[in-house]
Image 1: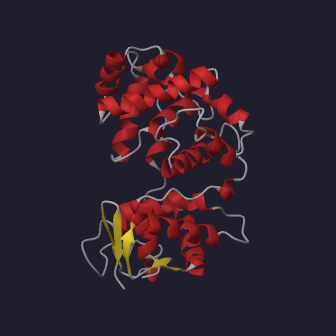
Image 2 (image 1 turned 180 degrees about the vertical axis):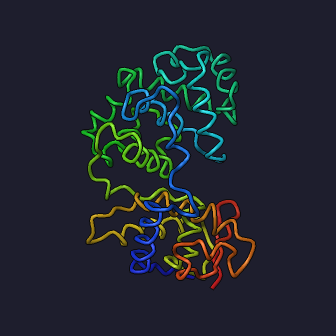
Length: 287
């Protein structure tokens, strides 16, 4: 069972979604959970950079809205504000760190999340003078080189270095932080999670039948969005936000077909009414 990748269809779907997202939104959604800043933080600042970097690192297996809301509350509270200063976190007792990350529900898995958070802060302190900006600068603000840096075995950036989370971080930096433009964004793959995959399948950009590892489907989704951008000024990361909303508010939410959201959907005419079924590490698509 081979997957069919339709890059021409992806071009059409992608442009419609981008136009909608930049206009009235996808089902009314025009921004992502990471787009809202804590009070007192200026866009493009070091504080903003550390806020999005550390929060993105624990953005796994949890509701994104709840995570970013918890992170904003944690940042704004005087008792926990220090959590976004890598040098201070690197020197903090583990029990205190866990307790403070639990205070406003920043940590969903307290021990694991605290370990991720502190490990990254220790790496930043030891190798980059406690500043994410220094990491970006050392990589010449080149997006693929930034990813290569955090994946270098000399450094420890758990979860942030992952294939999905790393790309997501680059997307947030370019789109929301905007403290410095990143180069070669066209070489960074779209961060494929179940929502990006589901929207890509539902719109027919990748088609089955298929029953196999989700990793194989993820590779196909990555390839089709790369291909959709060839010969244009667009790059695959641009499609992340609208695809995510399309699935989260529509494709994965609908109770049946015809889809109850079709009258609000900007790509309804491309809908194949084909669900992606994901079970652990496996995925299936009907014919």
